[in-house]
Image 1 (tube, rainbow, N blue to C red):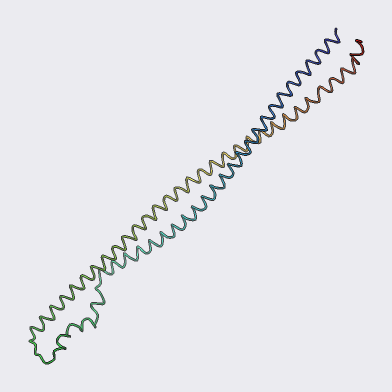
Image 2: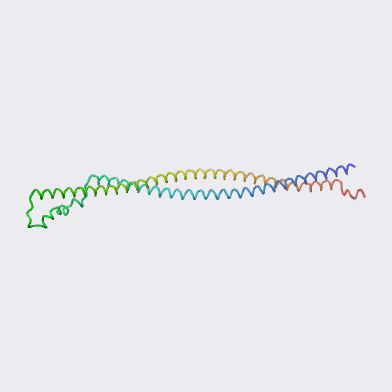
Length: 233
C-alpha cells in the first residue's frame, strides 16, 4: 500500500509537471508571436523614421532655395523702387535730346523764302514746346504706370514667397516633432522587445529544466523500489 501510495504521488507529480510544461510551452509560443509582431512593428517604425528624415531633408532644401529666391526678389524690389524714384525725378532723355530740340525749327527751315513775323514764329515755337512738354509728361506717366505695375507684381511675388517660406518652416518644425515622437516610440518598442526576449530566454531555460526533472526523479524511485511490476506478480 505504501508503495502504491508513493507510486500515485509520483504519477501525480509527473502529471503536474506535464501540465506546467504545457502551460510554459503555450506561454513561450505567445511570447514568440508577440516578439515577431513587435519586430515587424519595429521595422515599420524604422521605415517611417527614414521617410520622415528624407521628407525633412527635401523640405529643408526647398526652403533654402525659396529663401534664396526671396533674397533675389527683395533685391529686384529695391532696384525697382530706386528706378521709380529716379524716373519721377528726371525727364525723358529721348524727348529732351538735342536732336529733338532741333525739330522745333524744321517748319521755318522748310520755308526759307517766306518771311514770318517774329511774334508769330515765337508763338509757334511756344506752342510746339508746350506740345512736346505735354507729350513728355504723358510718356513719363506711362512709364511710371508700367514701372508701378512691375513693382506691384514683384511685391506680390515676394509676399507669396514669404508666405510659402513660412509654411515650409512650419512644416519642417511639424515633421521634426513627428520624427522625435517616432524615434521615442521606436526606443520604447525596442525596450519592450528586449524585455520580451529576456522573458522568452528565461522561460525556455526553465521549461528545459522541468523536462529533465521528472526523468531524474523516476530514476531515483526505480533505484529505491526496484521493479514494482515484478514484485506484485
